[in-house]
Image 1 (cartoon, rainbow, N blue to C red):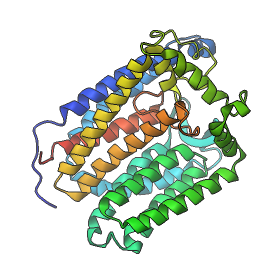
Image 2: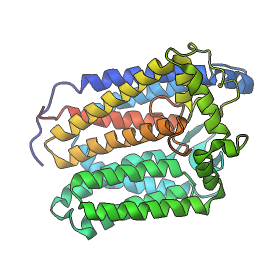
Image 3: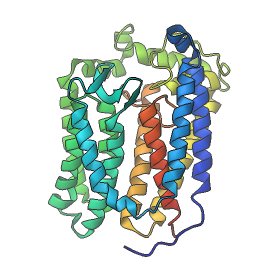
Length: 368
């Protein structure tokens, strides 16, 4: 492993952007969930208080991980993946896995639960970075550059699909393909992979009637405005009236039990409705800055393993943000993917902040 030049402090711009996104997220979770929380729990701050707790724990872990010895990341790669595979199997066992919204994706006791598929995304990044950096001279071969790494990622994807959770699986596989491409795989193999992936995705859609309804609703939500197309129609009803300046913080109409999941998957719709184009554009700019700094870290690291981890973390956040914003604006079919740092969710927020902590850690070793 090359000698690493250590900076005295991590990337300060990443820290500022994350704090701004988290602050915006807590405010918007409260605004988007207040009516629903009051209706269901009698406490308008129910989700906001939990989101603030998750954010606090996540920020603590982010700074803790940012100060660790980065050389430990190499040692964690294989054990972390094995643990995640065990958890993915456990979550499928009735009595162990918790069923929510038709998906058996959680493990936990009482009010505390974790979503193993979220942590598997990071585990796959670590393992592929370790594998691809060790096989740098063989990446352009079909066997070592494509079949083996995709076999590992595909196995995790299969377990996640058994829950089922197409959204998380899509982000994980997209990140894996980004890493394989960056590592130097041949374009003809990647092109063939994209063809197989599209065929496989079509098969997954055809295998589940509710996914077919999501596709038809994406193409024309007004064909079934009270069922399959309802969510995207209500999302557009939220985004449209926002205009340039928005209706004002707390003034959303759609959050009053019209738009399903206003504080999770569709929080960007409420953001656009209340804060308008300026607020939505600011959030997108913050994500763009974060992605830019992540790419900068990845290309200036002297070690391929660390560089691939930084690229994987950045790619994971970018893919998830693009898909979520695309879904709520009607550009993509509904997939059930949260918006990083803004949407309500303990496992997702904590995992993403830990991933950013890893990125901050690696930013201390860059050449630039």
